[in-house]
Image (cartoon, rainbow, N blue to C red):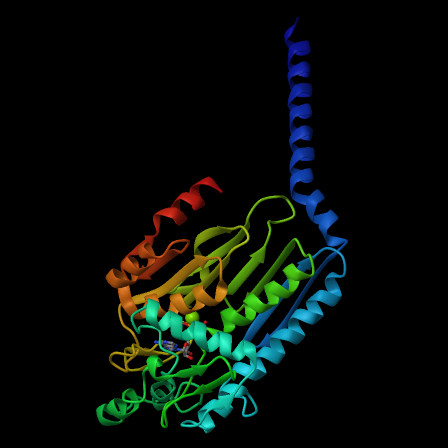
Length: 341
Ligand code: ADP
Ligand code: MG
């Protein structure tokens, strides 16, 4: 074979390989999405003070997305202490008396109390009076005085919440303010996911401002991928996590805060001091139940680097990423999943 013939053959071979690769990548990248698009509905709405995205694949996806948003809005109106007609507002207004609530409100409060026990009080649904002193929930951000802080701390104690399952009623002590802000979002996402599973949906994603839960895998058969923000530069991604029928929730000090001088005061309160928890910049929790992940992200943030890690390692089915100013820790199970997926 002369040189000319050989180079033509080689060129031909390269072209075949390239077009094969082009076909393959085209197939991998485009074909599954194009197929999914026929029956995919994706939509966003402001709920729970954040942007909520819902994506559903499969038959009736548009109607199902609407139903999920409707359910989430209804639940927010039951659980938010900033909605005057909510059941939680009724419990707070009538502190000291038994207040009848719907089964889901009871379930959420009981889960909140359970998370208080699991986290040795780092998560506490009665932290409302302390949050109010700092002005979270209103526009009046300020650093409270020590005396008023002690007064508010005296009203904190999740174990003081009484639950009467038989009559579906709840009672909190006078002066105590129930605040479900650290768990309600995850619980509401979970209710949305349950609605979709019961409707037979095999692929979906709900993202409520960083509280994310998915059903199944992506159209191309790979796990969903979720970025974990860099606390210093929230617009850039520090880790990418694979998610397969799971939930992921992140709590960070960059989400809601105010500055006084160089001091950053954020909305995750250490119930043992009344001050915003110090030490970590963000905590990401991966698990099955988004409500549990939501509460744990807040609790591990409060517990800090050492105790937070110990708690994560003690809980089966829970993985985490802890980020401090100088360090990051990825739990072994998650590190493994990030390599293999
Ligand atoms: P985000 O709401 O930004 O997703 P979190 O899930 O960490 O963040 O929840 C923070 C909210 O949880 C606060 O706005 C407040 O309502 C509530 N909260 C703050 N500190 C605690 C705590 N120690 N235990 C329980 N709830 C808390
Ligand atoms: Mg939380």
